[in-house]
Structure formats: structure tokens, C-alpha cells
Length: 411
Image 1 (cartoon, rainbow, N blue to C red):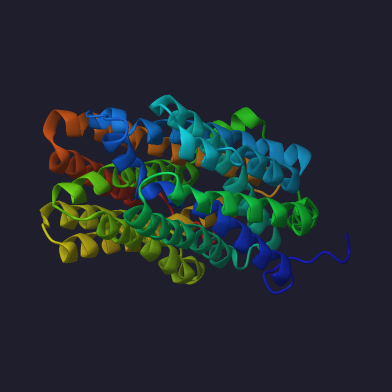
Image 2 (cartoon, one colour):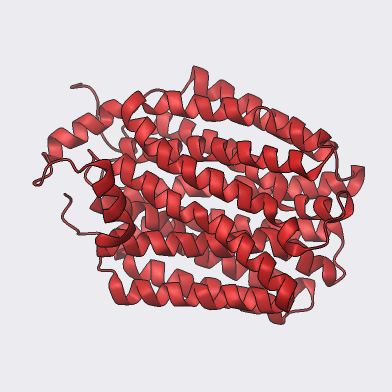
């Protein structure tokens, strides 16, 4: 135990490896971003937007529930076992999407993808927090989320280009086979367990004054009772609510404006690419200036970005709106995770991350369902405007309820 040290520099090789692994995790989601909504409409003839977006609902629910379990499983069985298990669950997904004879098969694939993402992404987050220690937690989360969402963007762009040249299926999903193979191999062979780093940090920090809370206490503290943790949970939910809307409705909105599939792929990539690149700076920035106003301001920038997309009718306008949405999300995403690390003691931090990610990724399902129903009832622009209003309101909640946690006494 004595040779184990906390910090990014002290654990650079293992941290870098986990950044690479999380890039492949993100790429698995990105392969759906451009082409699955068009597949629903063109190959399976789903007319209702709520039906088209059903794959995001299934993904969001299964990922959210798995996130909650992942934190508990990581504490009980170790991080590496959970990470490898997540990749094994992902293995059938590209093949199901390639050859699905009905939309039900696509929903099954997205259920497996949600479970896999909940296990793999949650575990890479927890492991990086373990390695980084308290001093550079925001930077660590920025690097993690940069890798994941920049890979989402690259995968969305690549599958869009492949689909434009070869068709919607099966060629774009060949990429997914490679993502799974490399991610699983790296996780099996090269990733090392990090729970020993938690023991070191716990020893340095001391036991929590009130003792280690029960799982039920952690759930309610993170969901409702702690002002900071619950503010983070609702902001995460609304952030992914608008992401679910963007994932499902933006390709349809762009297609309605006569954008070709390759241009839709480019637009679908701008948002996560900006989101990913921005997190290289915003995570570290939150270590310097604090968490609260980056979160509140980021939610407001997201709302403005959605508004710009709604009022635009050209590629340039759509691109500006997507970039603003990405900038706002970059301000929020790593900062929310760093806040959890600020507040939660190492002995119950993984469980708190799991609860937060439960609520955050339920936002995918709620956003897709809300956006789909609203689009069917009111049209695409009105549905997107409703989501923009909810996003702005979430920033108001953070501004009114949250206190600064960068100097929060842990316990």
C-alpha cells in the first residue's frame, strides 16, 4: 500500500490508458448518432417521432439503472471486473444493429448498449477519480469526458460518411466491431485495479465524522437532501434530457431543412466534438474558479444553442447552434462529476457517482420521450423550444440552490 500514490502525474500511464479506453466507450454510442433515426424512418417506416426515439428511451433507462448498480458493484467487486463485464455486454451490439430484421431487435441492441455504457463509462469515471486524488479532480474529469465525447463526434462523423457512400446498413456498424475488440482487449490486458488508491485516500482523509452512510442514505442524500448533490443530479438529468432531444430530433430537423446525410453527419459531430474539446479546458478551469457558476452558466449557454438551431434554416446557423450547445455542455459535464468528488467521502463516493449517473442518464429517456411526444403534438420547433426552456430553468435552480463546493469540507 505504501508505494501507491495519488495524482495524475504519479499515475500517468494508467490514467492515459483509461482515457484511451473511454474513447472507445464513447465511440460505441457515436456510431448511432447520425444514422439510427434515418434507419427508423427509411427502413422500418416509423412515422411517429415518439416511436423513432424509442431506441433512446430504452438506452437511457437501461444505462441509468446500470449506472446505479455500477457504483455499488465497483465498491464490492473492484473496478476492473465491472469494466471488463461492460465490454462483454457490448459485444453483440454491432451485429444486432447490422442485421436487425425488425425495430424490436434495434431496441434489444440499445438495451445492451445502455447496460454496457453504464458499466464501462461509470467505471472509467470512478477509476480516474481514484487515481487523481483531490487536487486535480476537475482536470481528470475533463480529460475523461473529452476522450469519450470527442470519440462520440468522430464516430458520428465516420458512420455518416460511410452511410453516405455505402448505405445505412451494414457497413457503418463494422466500426463498432473494432471498437469492442480493442476496448475489451485493453481492459483485460492493461488496465489495473484502482480500489487500493481509494484506501490510501480514505486513510489520508480520515473516516467520515458521521460514519459511512447506508446505500439508502447515499441515494436520498444525492437525490434530494444535500443541496449540492441534488442540484448536481437535477442539472445532470436536464443536461442529458436536451442531449436525448438533440440525438433524436436534430437529424430529423436537419433532414427537414433539406440537408444531405453527409452534412447531417457533420452537424451531428459538431456538438459532441465541441463538447469533447471544451472539456480539456473547463474541467481544469473549475479547479481554479469553482464549480457553481460554470454549471449554471453552462445550462444557460445550452439553452441559447438550442434556440439558435430552432431559428436557423442554413448549415451555418445549425453549426453555430450545435457548437454553442457543445460549449455549454462542456462547461457543465466534467464540473458536475468533480462536484460529486468534492462532496462525497471516498468511502461512499462510487455509490454517489452511481446515483448521480442514474438520474443523469434517465434524462436520455425522459428527453427522448418528451421530445417525441411534443414533436408529434406540436411539431419539431416547438418540442425543441420546450427543451430549451427546461434547460434554462435548470440553470436557475443551480444558481439559487447550490453553494460552491470546490472548498466544500468532505464528509
